[in-house]
Image (tube, rainbow, N blue to C red; front, side, top):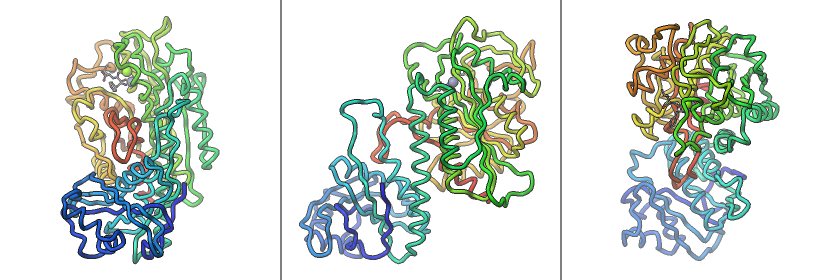
Length: 499
Ligand code: BES
Ligand code: ZN
Ligand code: MG
């Protein structure tokens, strides 16, 4: 896949098709739409006049015209983006993705996009390339027939009157982040017999080698030595040994304040049966995605390794399988976590928090001063926020605000839920320090967070519950259904802003 900048006239783009954004109720009486109308012999204005196309959000119209003169293209795709005021930078990515998927289906191999966006040229290009790359991911990796083999290979971005170097920079950044998101999506899409903890660790080693990250894989013996009784209580019922994946990015010259270290920690349950607190059979297959938090950590670290920001970043994935077995943990077992706290396990299906307890404590032991963990932690968050917002909770308002703000800039939605003493009280155990569930059905997402909070010492910490946002049940015009690589773009931005 190739991306190219074009700062001159769109007619110079030697491509098969042109795609242009159109605002609601626009006329073809001026600017680029007028040029396109002329190029198509008046078809654009007639399509508008006949109300075949009104520029509503998500609307598309394909116009075929006789190519003449310099213009090689004979197809023009109009893409509605709704009101001009609502057309923000992340929407450029959606437009690029929509055009890519639309044209790809029709066997088009190259096209030029006229995004007509206001703002920084690097940002416009970054969003566009990101949409171009992520829109071509498909779920059909294991099909032997009826596989999608069509691709758009060449993407030209036309923005007049800006520096070509800026477009180039943005495009290459967008490709890096987009390919990292596709890497995350491929992991989340992998069946659990293939992506078990050992394979998860191997994939981490591969990207570490490719991007120059340090990679350390802790096996169960090492975790035992470190006292990670909480994490190991989950893997004990599985034939698959747990792995703690530790990636580290070190800049050549750091601009971080002395001692400052950002850490991303992901839940990597490669399959969640619930353990002895077995889940119902119906829909259990969805639980292959229970490692999506870990997959987002790897994708984020891949992007960081390639973008090379000037601050160090730690990435940790607790890769574990949750199975029922003769050796599996029982409801009422008591285990001791790495920080010395004792946990009464009352439900073995609340396993995400058990593995994150030790992973988060380990991150802090490695020197992390800001920790963001992400996990498909609770079904409750799907009830609360659906697939639109990721829940964010934590012990530091500034960190939470930063995540929300970064999300807004890249087009990911976060919604804060509270934590607090009253909630924390409800996980006091009768016989141990804490228990891994709260009162039935009450504030499930918050209880998950305040449990993890027990394993954070002095670090600033935020928790993202991505159970609703990590997987898309429906295809979108710019995205296949399935894994979304949620949080990757947000966290990359957060790191870059910390420089
Ligand atoms: N992986 C699940 C969370 C989940 C459930 C995601 C349903 C998507 C759909 C997690 O490990 C889990 O089982 N959580 C329990 C916690 C409960 C036992 C306190 C849940 O949400 O039901
Ligand atoms: Zn789970
Ligand atoms: Mg579970």
